[in-house]
Amino acid sequence: MATPLAFTATYSHSADAVRAAIASEQYWKDRLAEVGGPGARLESFEPAGEVLTIRMVQTIAASELPSSITSVRPGDMIIPRTEVYTAGSNTGTFEAHVDGAPAEVNGTVTLTENGSGTVATVEGSVHVAVPLFGKKIEAVVAEKLLELLASEAAFTDTWVSQH
Image 1 (cartoon, rainbow, N blue to C red):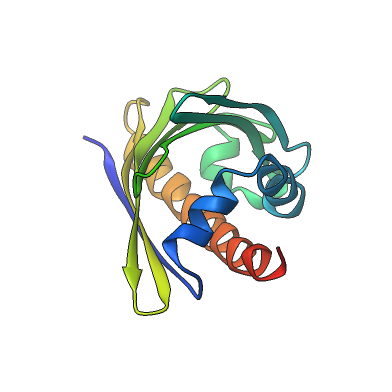
Image 2 (cartoon, one colour):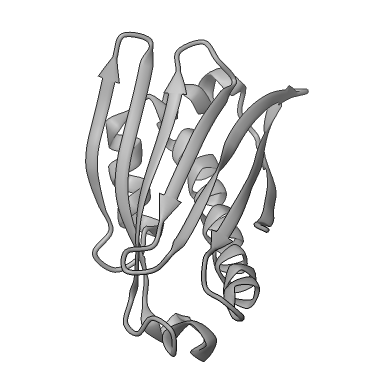
């Protein structure tokens, strides 16, 4: 059974402005440099017709992880992540996994106009296939992801303001 992942961000910009940021390769490079963790990088930015696929690698340093995770999987947590958006759509999908661990995350991001701003709703799940400790690890992974999503949301609102 997976652990649910739910997050809501409020942007002071229109959905069009947020979508324009998502469609900018520079936005992804800047976001990863700012909040992607040590060694974060953009693997690919692939517009193909109406579909945009972004592949990146993010890292959570071992020093930021609880012993319940580092005892099962020592070292930094390397997280390959893919996001897919379709032009004109307010919904995108994401998936991620942890290198060297049976951990997967997936879900959707939905943008909704809210007055002069936009609300981004993230809904997904975290699944760690480790007997006995899987749920405990899922909870920690979900907590770290929520922290990351909050940092990404703050970065995005600032980036859109500046571009």
